[in-house]
Amino acid sequence: MERWKACSGTDVLSDTIPEEDIPLDPLPLDAWHRANGARMVSFAGYDMPIQYSGDTISHGGGIVAEHHWTRESASLFDVSHMGQLGVSGDGAGEALEALLPGGIASLKEGRMRYSMLLNEDGGILDDLMVTNAGAQFGLVVNGACKWDDIAHLREHLPDEITLTHYNENALLALQGPKAADVLTALVPEAGELTFMTARYADWGGVPLWIARAGYTGEDGFEIAVPGEHAQQLAEALTADDRVEPAGLGARDSLRLEAGLPLYGHDMTDATDPVSADLTFALTKKRRETGRWMGHEKVMAVLDAGPEQKRVGLLIDGRMPAREGAEVFAGDTKVGTVTSGGFSPTLSRPIAMAYVDAAYTAEGTALECAVRNKRLPAAVSPMPFVPHRYFRGS
Amino acid sequence: MPRYFTEEHEWIDIEGDSATVGITDYAQEQLGDIVFVELPDVGAMLDKGGDAAVVESVKAASDVYSPITGEVTEANGSLEDEPALVNSSAEEEGWFFRLTVSDKEELDGLMDDKAYKAFVDNL
Image (cartoon, rainbow over all chains, first blue to last red; front, side, top):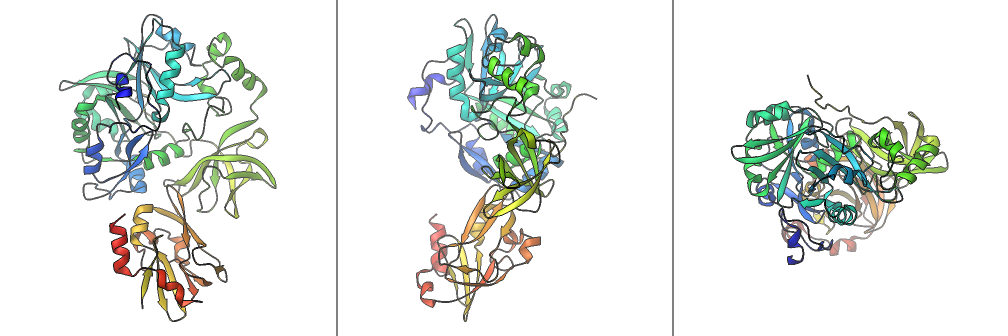
């Protein structure tokens, strides 16, 4: 443990990065999850709730109930495993632009953008949210990638730029159509936010950093809170009858319906942003000006068109096609499922797959091979379930 | 009608030369919401410990093994329309398939309900 203590808190990072297999300290809400009937699983080196059950959960618990509750009311997700980083110093925005393909320096204060770290080959090292937080840029990165991201940023950011890891912060996501009513009752300033904006708020002396964003396709918020106040916030939010806790299981089925790719599955360092159908994150002006890692390789794919592309698949019947299932057009293998499962909202299996460019048109009839069966599938636009973000009234 | 259990959390009821197989209540709870069950075809020959069915929860696919050797005589068609029966009634209405009992000695290595309960308590 001591090896990586230097990374904790708000200390400027040392060079010491933990090995992946070293168990990490419990996250701030660990005991709260267990007391609320969570089933814990190992994820990104932490024990995390996959689903809840028991008397304290009004809808009864389980992935499907948590999923529906999120679409109909509001769910509280603990995503404290994710990395919360700060990048500060003169020229921090420009420095980040050398590593991210989006417009960062031009981001107005309080605005956020989806982006990704790319390697020299244009492969995706991680996807992330970057926010102009005024005094610094805030980055929220995937839990499983955060140590590698930190090493990458440290290696490539100039010495005068300071990288801070807010390792003792918790991150709570409140997601669902009733999230805004619930949160503004506690923190009125939250009501001033629209999708992809963020601000600071003081909650009875507890500093909160609130972003109107999320990973479910619903309206909602991600709230950074000091770890020692995380339980207090979780309890205040779930004291509202409209809110129940939800685990990683529902988070995965919700994001799949929302068409949102999951790092390590739907994109890896072997996939580029164009093939991953994330071209929107390549800010137009920066495609021309370049000077970001991977620019040349990514532009070559953009110009020539990708060999394979991430698409959505609607699958007939009830049997899910999961990650690794091969995709066929007749006898020809044309792709592979990268994540798939049963959609509780649509009551049918859905999937994301990388398929050869010739088979990516909407409605293209394909088949997924699952065990000894071929499941009919059709290329579908994403999201599978419409987004309901709040962009202003 | 004696009921036996496997360490893979299947139950098996024996009635003469016929057996009914399902997964235990403990198993369904571990799997969570079940969305699909792939059952063996009638007439299929199953080996003791061999693949017999696949149960798909929202999260993952899990294999179900045959506790004994035999020929499938019936599959529970109700699960086709209502796979959640496995969640609500794992050890009754949510049965998976019936098969012939070809070798009663195969039952010797299985657990009775008391032994299975002790087995689960230790997991």
